[in-house]
Image (tube, rainbow, N blue to C red):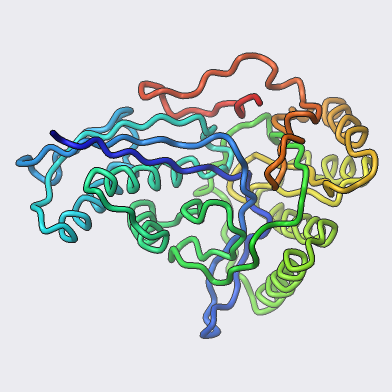
Amino acid sequence: MIRTGTGHAPCHHGEILQGVFLDADGRRCAGLVTLPMPGPGSRAEFVRRPGTEPGALTAVPADRTKAVRAAALAVAQCAQRTGQPPCGGELRITSDIPVGLGMGSSTSDVIATVRAVADSYGLRPAPESVARLAVRAELACDPLMLDGRPVLFAQREGRVLEALGPALPPLVVVGCALGAGAPVDTLSLPVREPGDGDVRAFERLRTLLRRAVATADAALLGEVATTSARRGQQALQHPEFDALTGISRRVGAVGVQIAHSGAVAGVLFDAAAPGLRHRVRSCLRALDAHGIPATRTFTTFDTTTSEELPHGPAHRRGDRPAGPGTARRPAPLPAL
């Protein structure tokens, strides 16, 4: 009986920090630290077809070209490890991650696919191996294979530049979508070669974020995220950015974070702040007053708090997860 392999991967809520950093050898590397988000993810099923050509891969939906490339790479690697001839197969992906908002939807598809192919061979690949395959499949990837651990990750090389610690400080995040949630075409954004001053600035933020994680300092993390988001506006130029940072100050949040390759954003609160429910409600009202749609309120730690906190009106209707036949299009964040 042919084994059906399965795999899953989460998403993220954009970046806390993104820039150019120095690796252990002093070489410049593009790097990022993502904000984990519980809930949405991609799921993949893969069925091998022994005796078929290695390139005979079909996918549902058919437009998941990066996932198909990842499947072919994973089949070749797994076949070599198990001493079997490579073959084709059938890939099926379901996902409830919105596309184009900067939440890692394509990386999640790729990682779920690699894990499903490996599972079909009875293998469980290490995160480092998954990262290498993901970069080969889509040229750059998010650190979703690390399952939420805070790391500075070289997205174009698929390697960890620094493990920042076991967990982020406890935060409550009020998610929202800028630019009416329209996808961001990252290829059309202006590209500016970072200078030595830019690298020094990013390294200072890296040092501050390391300290914030080590001391569970939510306020310091918020400072880093806001500074990184402000630098990102040089390219993204979201017209709502000043309004968002103003709301953050007025409601007593520690800062904001914005996806550097999308429209998703978050107002960050210290989970231990007094009057947290009131602050979150005030934030939701202010976002609504400025025409910024609230999406989802969640936390960076395991708790039922996120289910008790108020949520924005944007997702009180019944959103349907994307199924295998669903086209890749912008979608609202799933409701809690």
